[in-house]
Image 1 (tube, rainbow, N blue to C red):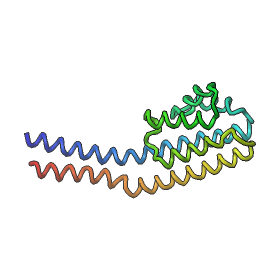
Image 2 (cartoon, rainbow, N blue to C red; image 1 turned 180 degrees about the horizontal axis):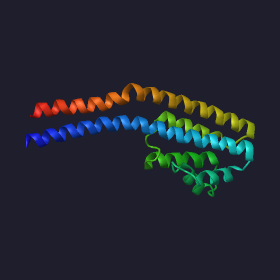
Image 3 (cartoon, one colour; image 1 turned 30 degrees about the horizontal axis):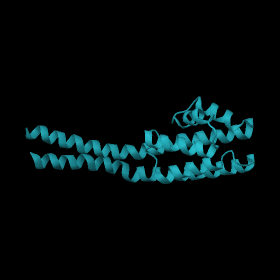
Image 4 (spheres, rainbow, N blue to C red; image 1 turned 45 degrees about the horizontal axis):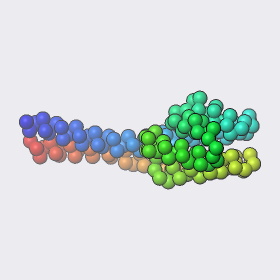
Length: 169
């Protein structure tokens, strides 16, 4: 019975360490996807000069986060793009696909949506470039955090589980 409990303690601790490490990596990957999406929005605005509705429709066709599909579904509602964007972010941050993001990262995306479609194309592209730089800074910070703490979380999980297993046996 003790051996089973020791193996369970080791497994649970190792899982917790791995989960903590994977959460950082998941945030980084999600921000990389959003960076690529917003960069594509910039390209569509600059080279194709599509309307916001066409851009959202085009983005929803290859959506990996659910954000563009949710926004596309809401686009027919009689509300501002900023409000629809904020509602889509709120829904997805609660539902799960954007839940790994921190409050600051969600606020950064909200700010992007507040100014998108509200001014001339040049100002919108400047806002997009500003948002892209902020996302790049977040990705760099997460890369550093993962390099420093990712392996540590995994190792501490296993070591903590081994310590508990030894104490149980």
